[in-house]
Length: 406
Ligand code: CTP
Image 1 (cartoon, rainbow, N blue to C red):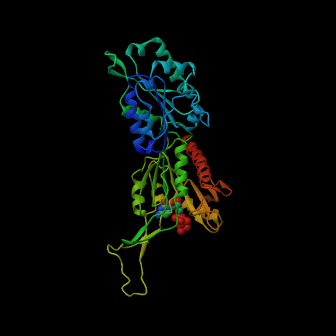
Image 2 (image 1 turned 45 degrees about the vertical axis):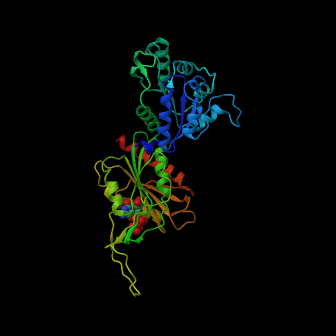
Image 3 (image 1 turned 60 degrees about the vertical axis):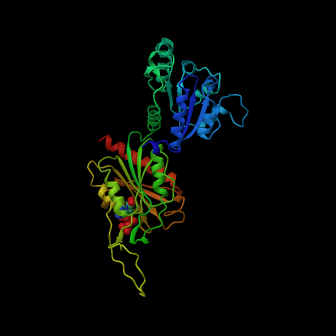
């Protein structure tokens, strides 16, 4: 889970001047290993404990310390544009006090006032400082405003005392970051979405297969948009050459039978199923274990049998998710799609007029009509696959909401 949640995420780590600053090195190194893009902002006092070169080497990014360093952009605003999530670890009483009271007198405290993404505070200090009325009131004020506070741990403190105030281990801090990334809210927050994408390959022999030109772009756009809207998303994907969308769990499959099996593993566990894969309808009845040779023949016959219908089997799940399918049509687009919707037990079908320029397989755009189970038809103009994904999820979200209100 850690990898898919953190990969490609942009994380600002604020390091302030406490002895636990050395632990921030391990945190940053762990985030970088999980393929996050990390920018470290240090306070002047943090530099007394750890050198900025350490963080620059770990992240591969320059380390920011100075509000006044000359640069082309406005640095604290650029940090806010960059960040998906911010963590201050360790957070001293000083930065907590400044953040709680809106004091902006260095780069980190100034940037803190510009962030709109989740901010995590991991306090670390002497236990009496932590227990002081001022620090407790500041932490409470920050929590009320939506900051996430990581509870300091009890134990041996650098001052020689034993008590609460230790910075928790990297694992706890990473879990707080993952949680913040997952629960950013959004209209599909808390919902589980399963998407199929791409073509399937049906083997004839070890070096040949029957397939189709699906690029997977439509399904990948749906998965990415559902994740952006706060859903927890799994993408079962046939062979494509696309980057996995950020924060999405990807299950790679090859044949229709494998796609069916991978999807069935989620039976009863999802709220929305979107079947965007171009699943092969037929497969060779027997796949030869050895490469088939021409052997001087002029003809070859391959007997084909049906593959499992993934979407129709999802329609038999209990509880049954809201089901969205696609139909590639060349004529009577809406009538054929509506018939397919009824036959396969879908709630919404995206009818693709593949005869039109700019629509269908492979390209960046699509021209579709949405037809839903209560007969509503929405003809959408030629648009990007990302925009089609957004329109599809708007409608699917309505269907989920109307089902919940029944
Ligand atoms: N689908 C599936 N499993 C299959 C075949 C299709 O889940 N074995 C899904 C596709 O992901 C898509 C929808 O069903 O959402 C397409 O339905 P289908 O009946 O295959 O439509 P067409 O490809 O248009 O096929 P035809 O008109 O030949 O029936």
